[in-house]
Image (cartoon, rainbow, N blue to C red; front, side, top):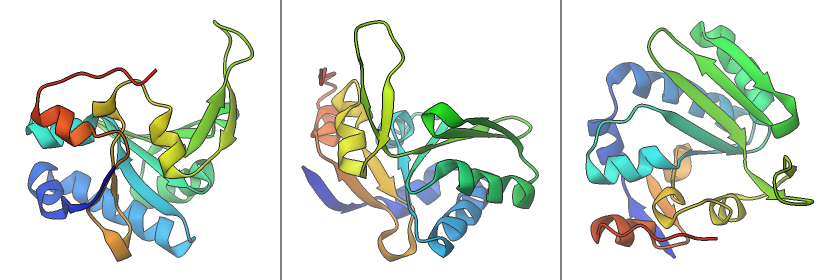
Length: 166
């Protein structure tokens, strides 16, 4: 597992100023409520590849819906909530930010919706599809920019390897 590489300056070079400002507001609110917050998934992969992608996915070790409800009025976002999955979408003029509670999913049988339970960031990342999508970057003040990579996704990105996790 890769943990400890700091990508904070790379995040700041990669993201447009407006998005950085919004992430700052979200991070501040998460910190105030004691929630851990991470940039996760495809955007982390694309940041490492330096490919533009502003499809922002965040996860929190906390209550994503409560966090999104605090953020929407502060940032003039349109809010869409999916209570069953612990997710919310903040929509702006030309992009959106998805916020989810870190989770584990279990399936009673193939083809049915999952039963969702809260989990920590490591469990959340391990449930993902590919190693290159199973990375997160901390957005919290005390460890901003730290890469969490339990499946070796950064190494796979560097080798141009797509490795299935499940």
